Length: 63
Length: 212
Image (cartoon, rainbow over all chains, first blue to last red; front, side, top):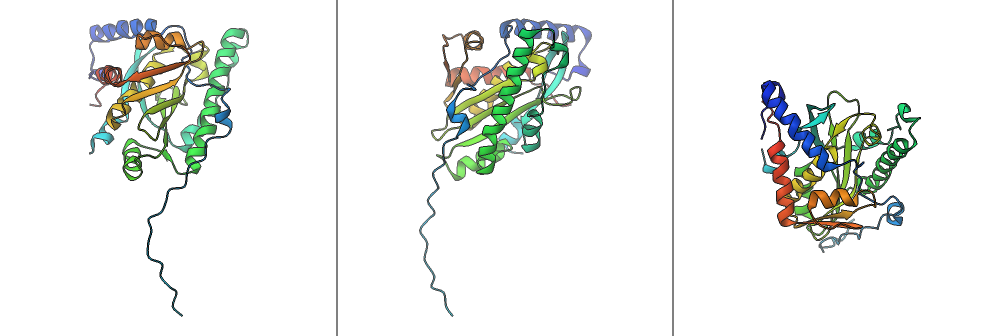
């Protein structure tokens, strides 16, 4: 865990900035997308199976 | 406070114009998801066709994620918090549930990025969409590491839920990103198994900024 930015010394902030820069280089020049916009599944999501309700007693209606 | 309730939201630092700034990751609600559908390609990218295309892609992903998310919302299988997701799983262990993560900052009017994730019937997490704001993907806004932190947060949630696997589809453009992050060969599909899930979760915890 890191301490809040406003409590960091200038040296600590600079070290964090350097660390983030290094990490960003690893991330690369990418928009970072997952997923396939061409997927047909997107247009029509799978139907969920209705969950079975627990069997219960059927009460007769009384007049 | 339960363990799940203490995990999200997560505050962490990202690079904005090469300076560290705080952002917050949390579960999105309906308003947040719909807000991302109003994202636009920044006007300043009009001269740069390549960046404009990237920004348009980001917008399209946000729209598709919202479209899909609405199905889960309407079938009452979307979770709006981690404790709620845990409760849904407890009630229906083989149910398929969806959640949407957003990253926000008090210095930006809308979310900086998001991810639509499904918890499948066999307790895996499937990343349907992960995207950043069109201004970031089009480089009109110099913010880094939003995508990486979203991926790490998904792994943190997977670890909390005891999910042994996180998987998703990689595009031609993003496959190399996952190869670098996961240090595994990736083509059109990536799989993050238990050990790596823990590593990525720990990486985010190390970057977490305390609230006081």
